[in-house]
Image (cartoon, rainbow, N blue to C red):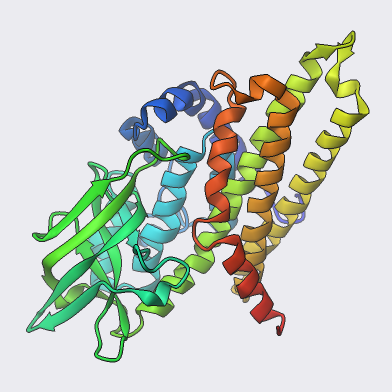
Length: 378
């Protein structure tokens, strides 16, 4: 992708790929099996400079462009979606709203620590009755003097219940007419609890939590942006987040394809490698072609964002297409592995499970099509 990438991007790709192969790959299967969030890998990603990649150095970040960050997510997902999810959710959904909408005081207080990997941050949007309908939020925050009193709950929130989680940005109803606002809720606030969720099909080594607010009190100054701007803040954050989810789909597809290709070149039937049979070779050709198309679409959308141009339509397209390509490639990769593809001893089984979240998280494929259809005038 020379049209979009320069030498810095190539260096980031190689650096993150080497890190993922050397430090994440040997642990990925065990962490997945035990549903274990790795503090050590999170710390190492922080030391590598992967947290706060696009944040200004003024606040402790790396000051890189968004494509650099997307490439890092892609390369992590090529090896392990769980670690990629930790990075993507923190950078896009955790740090992003504070950096883009926070006051100077909020940014200087929170961002430096969040840019090191010492602390993680959650994005409290989804609720049991408010998924695709993000404006259906029922969590309510009532102002009492100089405080907000919050009651309600959130579900499926990434990074929100680790031992190093520092807090979450929460969408809540704050007005009598249903106005929504975004509020910063530190982790140790009385009346606030975060409970890890287990038994997941996918991303089993990432942290997913339910959040509960029972007369949770935070200072009024914890408001992010202005009152009534919550939906705009959260949805605009999702536009950028879709690029990261697309990168996860692209990286997963690349990893699954590489596993399938290597297996097909080694596995012999009827006296020759199965890669030599047209039925298998055509599968691999289709996989390679769709991956290249997905990468071009994602990098173009990211280029638009980096250039300060409108990118929401392209982000939705990239998220939709990359997640669908991940589904196709993972499925075909299992088929190429045959019975071995159904066994945990072969990594493709984990990739097949991990891809299933991509058509659901941060806006389902159906919602992406709805977003795209509106942009094209339907």
